[in-house]
Amino acid sequence: MTNVTPEKILQTGLAFWASKILLSAVEMELFTELARGPQRFEALRGRLGLHPRAARDFFDALVALGFLKRESDAYENMPETELFLDKGKPSYVGGILEMANHRLYPFWGHLTEALRTGAPQSEIKGGGPGFFEALYADPARLRGFLSSMTGLSHGANLTIASKFPWRDYKTFVDVGTAQGDLAVQIAKQNPHLRGVGYDLPEVAPAFEEYARATGTNTQLTFAPGNFLQEDLPKADVILMGHILHDWDLPTKRALIEKAYKALPPGGALVVYEAIIDDARCKNAFGLMMSLNMLIETTGGFDYTGADCSAWMRDAGFKTTRVEALVGPDSMVVGLK
Image (cartoon, rainbow, N blue to C red; front, side, top):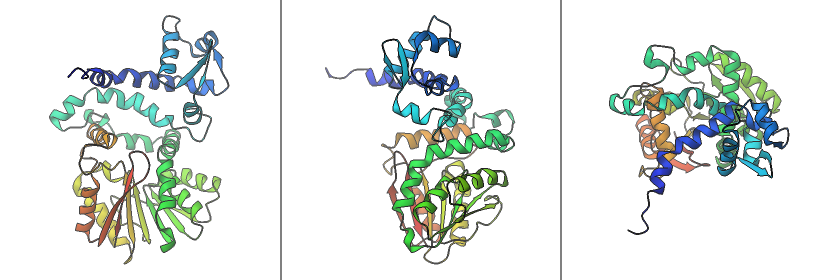
């Protein structure tokens, strides 16, 4: 018992300190400012408009957390923050963090209430429009969100594009395509394929612009639609990335059944997100994402690979398999 300490308990219990320091730095565009080059303390403090009382502690905390480095009195980005948190780069993923700071951070303060009531704690708690309804009504905000989703899922998209046996297929549909990075990466690595990005009509301009910018517009087209209300477009492979966890079990099953009907014999459904490990004890991110679905939605939840495989078999899929991608993400593949 002499080696037992409360360190992990205290680190986790106070982890919101580190989280809010990073989120505030993103909010103030600190990393974008430092992308211009190293800056001395007083100049950086002045440019961000910080009070002298705690500015040095703030910057040095970011150094200690590994997000900045300091030489003498000058601060600069670390490679990760330089690449992913500079708003001027296409690799910027800070849009998700901006949303987390402004929305999720206060909502998660009501996790205990959510656990006891099973009710969401987001905008819909007070009868307002849901996050996505408000987002899709604001074109500029929607573009920023779609771009940040690309940065968040890019690694998994690259892995799917190279790992899945695309040589056996000719067409695919990316359901809930957003900006279309999954479709783009598949097309870039597999020139013989033709693909469709399927999403609400408001997404079309962002998808088509991204396809043109990546030179995949001759392989990809956009199909507007609502997967909750309509049949899915037909193709050899149907992909659903970060889609199923938004919905309750009947809706999950209905979407899988729609995919089954849209596929030919031998076709494949690929579902990917932060799939929880079957033992439900290792993929902490997947489990926390499921709690985020509790906070955000009326019925959404994340699930294990075994769960998804069972739903696929119930829909008629002959075989299923689960494959790890990158980080917390895995894909479940069902063959018709």
